Length: 171
Image (cartoon, rainbow, N blue to C red; front, side):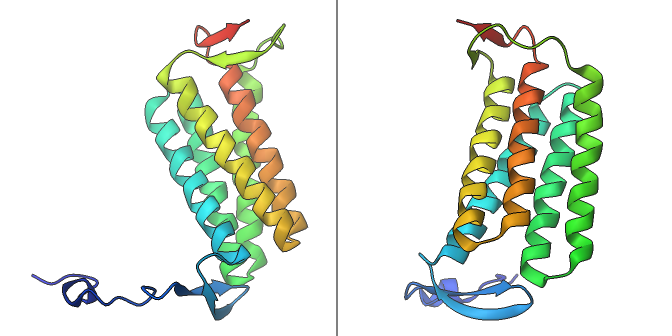
């Protein structure tokens, strides 16, 4: 049996000194772990994880919509890593498919503030918050198209939250 990262055995892995290598727009670059690019990738990775976590807790068709949000986030990350516009196109396609699902199950708008009162709704809300955080990081990098897509995805997550009555609480 072998480890994928045998450096763990020697307690000396790349990145232990506070730097890492990031693939950004098709170029591998060494960067400090607190650089804007690394922070953006971290927030995007977290948003993706929470989107898939929410999908695993939701009923259909909300689960499918959140899974598509997760795939859109993954493709956006591939686009930013490689610079290949095909990945951005796929991210948009996943977004549009999720939007269709959310629209088909949407109800009337809430009459007041919405707060989650279930694990399912809270999971979607966590994903929404992390998507919004990734959007802010994209803005700091000057990634306008990515920021716009992330804004739309976080708004879509909110719409999916609204399809979860009785998990909707109006205060």
